[in-house]
Image (cartoon, rainbow, N blue to C red):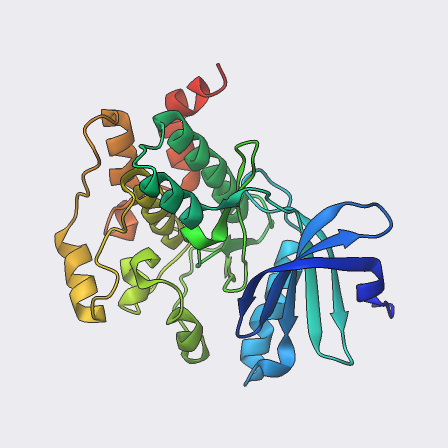
Length: 290
């Protein structure tokens, strides 16, 4: 990569998120005046090369993505001297899905069913793209799809972001399993958004993302997580195992209940793929265009 002065190219307006490995800030590109979200990762804070590789993989994956339901990649730069990785992305100018649910809950307001279908449709399109079309020989598994990582724009668009725990899977019927160095990262992913197969450290594939989407949609509808947040891991697994059907409020349609049931199939072999879900519920998704 050529040597650049990233701070000269992008003016920092404000910090909008902060974590152990870096920050997300709102930045204005000086040459165009456009405003973007910029994730700045401090690779020198990584304790192992494998941990650092997660951030490098995120940058490599994001630069090639171009689909509805996924935050658009704009630019990226690696500052070798300071070990900082910058990823510039589309700025979703409303809030994340967690903040939206809190806002609706505080107003004691039900989320309109049409909006639920709209969010589900856009995110499913994004997952279908990751799983089937983004790469010819590989499946991209997000592995960290939660309301914190779903971003909304004021025009109603929903985008998934934060590809820092992404994994690729060969398109040959093979499976994934968490590696030892991934446990630390997996432990900070909200457990009530992780599929049972990751919680129990079993083999998994791209359908792990379908379960996580289900937890997002369930939370959007009901304003609560599918399990009690502060349970111990064994209790959490038991609760998920016992609660095979998660009921939503009766004023929502049977089709929406069926959709939630399909997303939250405990057995990943019985879970439909993103493509199959888009086909099965195409009448509901098509109605959004009318």
